[in-house]
Each structure stands twice: as C-alpha cells, then as structure tokens.
Image 1: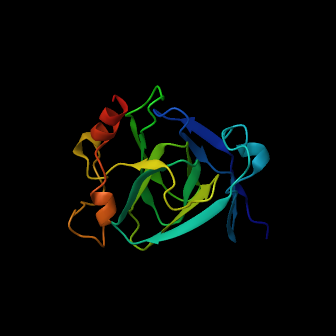
Image 2 (image 1 turned 90 degrees about the vertical axis):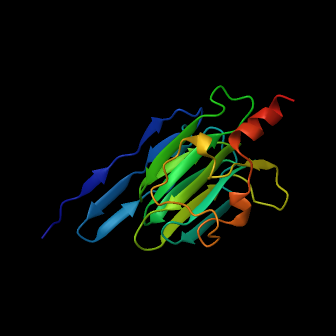
Amino acid sequence: MVSELAVEEFSTEETAIAGLVVIHARSVTDARGTVRELYRGSVYSPVLSDVTQGWKQINLTRTRRGAVRGLHGESMAKLVTVASGSAFGVYVDTRPESRTVGNVVTVSLIPGKQVYVPQGVCNGFQATAEHDTEYLYFFDSEWRPQMSGVAVTPLDSALGLTWPISINPNDHDQISEKDAAAPTLSSILSGYAV
C-alpha cells in the first residue's frame, strides 16, 4: 500500500516590524510522520540576507505551560521555532534607527512555523501547550556574558499584550525576577532621545 504524501511548501510573511519575517517551513508528511526542513541555506538565504556567516549557536529550551521567557534583544540575529508544543511569540522593535521602532508583533508558534528575528528586536514567548514546549533558537553569533543588547519587561502594559495565560509577576517559576524587573519600552525609547 502506498501512502499519500502531504507537502507543505516553504513560504514567508512580512510583519509590522522591519526585517521580522514569519516563515512556514517546508514539510513532507506521510503515514509514518513528518519531515520538516528547519533550515536549508539555498532557500532561506535570500530571506535571511542579514545572516551572512551561517548559524554559530543553536539552543533548545524546555518550558512548562504558562512560563514566560524574554523579552530579549541581543546583538545577534535569531531564527526561532517550536520543536514540540506551542508558544505565544512576542517581538518588540527596540532599534533606534528602525522605521518600525516601538512596534509589537505576536505570532502563535507551532512546529513548522518559524520567525526570523533581526538583531536588536526583542524576542520572548509564553509556553501554551498542555505539556512542556521545546523552543528552538538558531543564533548568528555565539552568546557571551555582557553581550550588548536590550531587554523589555513582558509585564509592560503599554505593549498591549494579552498573554494567553495570566502572568503572576511574583511567581518566579513563571517569569524570572530579571525579566519581570526589565525596563519598559517607553523608558528604553526615551533613553535614545538623550
């Protein structure tokens, strides 16, 4: 018996943040399961033109339902996706020279849906699956202590976010003390005007 193939082709979507791209990865599914392309240089390179030297570090986090990581905008570009589970992805443009500075974009992430995050755009997420979510990061440079970058608190009401699962700022199993205490977007943007 020959099983039918279901093929999802590679496609992209522009967003309200300059350079932030939502990517639908190519996948092939048959009776055995799914093969998904996480990255193929010849296909991704035209879309990710800022990534000229390839990926230098790849991380996988395992995060329990309702927990939040971020919002962090280090001096590295990222390709992020969910390997398993689901997440509410949040992206904030904190680049002072950007035409979309201050814009906020949210993306519901499931396996096969990726987001390219340019340097200086903050990335964060809340795990939303019933079981743990595995969130995958590709970085164009290696992380190092005291790396330049910016962080915005996910609790900033001015971001206009409706988190799928309510965040208790005092529950450090749900949000780190460092992330909860990060500056607001307006305080970061006002620092640029000095």
